[in-house]
Image (cartoon, rainbow, N blue to C red; front, side):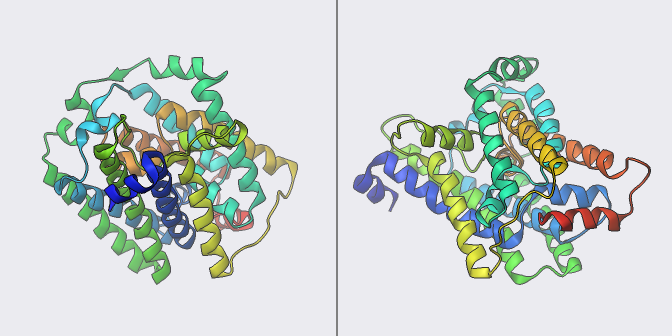
Length: 365
């Protein structure tokens, strides 16, 4: 089927169609499940084992399981994955992950969550998402790129045995599937305990399957393409920056990344429309606006420094067991936990009900 698609619309057209369709799946699934690493991390550090943790665990484990199965069926070639074959930055993963984690707490949503919320009418998320994309582009090729290059160059690794987290610990391919099943079992436990709704179950698993679909689709396309084609999955740092430049400059042929972002937006909009959750929301004051914008800047720079966002590194990269992706994921959790503690405990320990009221008042889960 993929060969037929390439023959019909060309390599670029096939990549764009795949990106848009996978984006539609992710957007709809993320909107229905309220998937968000920020929400899960905040609840975890407050020792509240809620449905939001269950959603993240189900999405994360579904991505691991489906991606490992695709590896086993030889649908994905590890040699073509940059995170497993090219030098990567450990310092970028640590510093970038910490910055991104702190930023997503300030903006009350990671980059993918801001995109999904923008599609449902949240103007706060829309503005923060635009600032995120501008900062990501400045970090990639603009004024912030020298600082990013310097920080990323402090500590790099390039040995394939250190790039693969399974190889680092002397584990075989089967171990990756077992780890995914363990995480999935934990997700089921939390889901049952928190009373997760069926739509949220399906949405969370759909998020993970979209990540695996991204890896499988781009790997299959790389096998057929005449020109070198990157094998990657869902991420929202580089693609957001590329989509921004695609809109501002004279358009060229779209690709997987530039079709992914509007695909996610469309999927989330359709899911919200059908679910009756479309609603315009704005800022409630200047102070909250400053917080959102500061968080967006930190996520834009941190995500580009780390080589991925909460989805790009935290789920897509972790699903292929890239060492730096797991380091980034841990750093994001730590950065989010520390920042939330600073924000919710300015004069002592905040009660869980206080933190809950703050989250509910924002409209961001």
